[in-house]
Amino acid sequence: MVFLKTKAMVLECFNAPLVMKELEIPVLEHSQVLVKIDAAGVCGSDVHMWKGEDERTPLPIILGHEGVGTVVEVKGSKNYVTGEPVKQGDRILWDRGVTCNACYACAVLNEPWLCANRKVYGINRAFQEAPHLNGCYAEHIILSANTNLFHITEDIDPAVLVSASCAGATVAHAFDHHTVPFGGSILVQGPGPLGVYGVVFAKYLGASQIFVTGGSENRLELCKEFGATEILNRRTTSIEERREYILSRTGGRGVDMVLEAAGDPGAVHEGLKLVRKGGAYVSVGFSQPPGDCKVDFFEDVVKKNLKIQGVWVSSTRHTHMSLELMQKNKDLFKKMITHRFSLAEANEALAAMNSREALKAVLIP
Image (cartoon, rainbow, N blue to C red; front, side):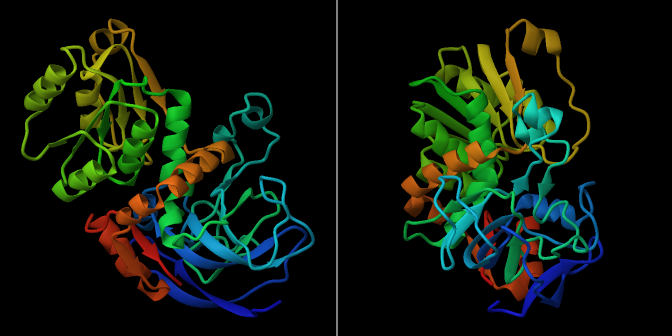
């Protein structure tokens, strides 16, 4: 054991500042991996958890489900998803969610994202739960034996990689369900990290028209740098103006696919009317209950023979897809990191994400 103690920012009460704690690092159990955190992503979901809006969040907890780090110690043997052994000094990224591989969703449906026993670092793993270092807002984390790991072999800024296991993997899951036709059109609703990944995936898959709607001009302009062909600011255009514009650019049909990444019922109501007949509406933006969304199911769904797909979290396959895409576009994705903070500044990082001052904030312990 190299380190006897470590530090972590702990959420003890909702809507209260995180508290810095010095903690002892416990002795590892078989196939556990002790990791020094090199970068921890501050996700929009973390803000909801800090506010007590996510019913999965136990107290106290070390937040942070997006992490990249360096292996300090491996107890016994542990392999990467590629089969190679994990070694001390390796830089790694890991699946944020750990599934049981035994419940109905895992074993019968082969849909691990619906695992009834899924445990997620920094989301539903309490501080009291052994081995206690269960979140990324810390100097170290201990990864369980059944956590899937990826070896980062390229020279790449770890801060750039953190979102690959969350926003990137979730959007990969969306395109795994339904893909935009090559040469086709897509509307991405919401220019946050999910929307940015949506733009890049759509471009990579060959979409010729990539529309993005949102309320932040800076984020919309960034989406253009990532490959969006058209941007529409919802603060300076009306719903009818956006509808007329998109229909005029798609032969009056509407887009082949809408990727909802806004988490707003109003976006759903608008987006369903912008999909062509036989198209698809795919939703990744709702991580918390936003209230009811009224839909004219006959006109907007049945009569159009529309496909509607909800997307909940992701699997190891999707993390792999996201990581591959990220590493092919690492210089581009670096532009998504707008703010960097020290571990002690975790409260300031949450505030920057809450105010939307930051597109993506990252802690560098």
